[in-house]
Every structure is written in structure tokens, then in C-alpha cells.
Length: 216
Image 1 (spheres, helix red, strand yellow):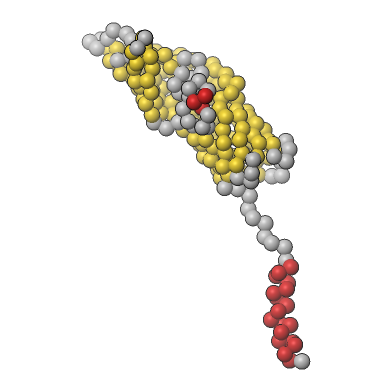
Image 2 (spheres, one colour):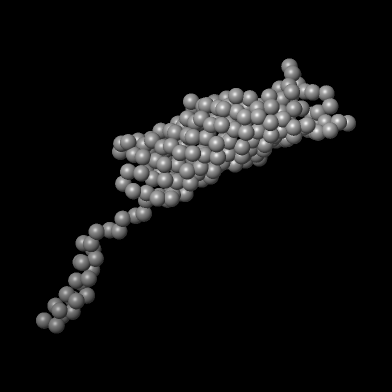
């Protein structure tokens, strides 16, 4: 009898915990987003975003969007067969709200601010259509006496998109955006006082980028 009681004492907790429901694994709270197909859209460069979760409920999730196109060098054609090089840096910050529209599909939207910095030697840089979304949307003019031009661009935009979940961790989607930007270009001239150009830009991109997301 004592043997049976002892076995019951030691085995009962095993059966209790074995039949208890398993603890639900936490949903992913971090996301990396890349835009590997930007080269197909206006020959744009790769964008990378990190999106930590702010809050989530059964229908809606909100994330901070921190993005960049990093520091890089480009070449622009100033005349047939003649290229000018320039360097650029970009940083983006926004808030993304995602809403489920189906088991795997969702829509998202939100605001984003962006800062871009451009430097070029021997040419005058001017913004072209699409500059708020594609950092290589520039015009380079060869002007006598221009030694260097530095352009700063601040922009505020609204974005919206659609994404489809391929697996628990991977999603694909497409994004559209519109925005307004303010640029200031300092022009260094040989033998003359420096000059400044300022202006506003309004832009719309029906296909800002196609992206892949990884959540963990």
C-alpha cells in the first residue's frame, strides 16, 4: 500500500503538468524590411527598415519605422558620355499602423519624416521628380565656376500599402506614398561668394517600393 501511495505522490504531478496546455509562444515583436526590387523602380537603391512593435491587439498593430539608404556614391550623366559623381545619405523615421484584412492579408499606413544629404564636386545638384522617395532622382548641371554643391532635403510624407504573409516569419508587399519636401543647396563658387538655392517639392509615387519583411 505504501508503495502505491509513493508512486501516486511522485507520478501525479507529472500527469497534471503533462495535461496542462502549453504556454503560448510570444508573437514576433521585431521586423526587418528590405526593398530588393528598387533597381527595377527608377533604378533606385536598396532601402532597409527596422520596425520594433509599439502595441498590438487582435486587429491592429503599430510599429516604429527606422530606415535608411545608407551612405553611398552615384554617377549622373551631365552631358553625353560625361558623368559626375555624388555622395548621398538618407535617414527615415515613421509610425506604421497595420490592420488585418484576412487570414494572411493586411493593409498599413502612417506618416514618415525623412532627411537626405547630397554632396557633388564640380556640378550643381538640383532635385528632380521622385526625389522624396528615390535619392538618385537628381539633375546635375555643369556650370562654369561651380566647385561643389551640398543639398539638404527634409520631407514629410504619408504612406500606405498592402502586405501578404507567406509564412509566419516572411511577408511581401507593395507601398505607395505622397509627400512634401524642402531643400536647401549651398553652392561653392570659384572666386565668387557662395550662393544658396531653396525650394519646395511635392511628390507622389504609386509604387514607392516592393518589399520583403522578416519578423522575429
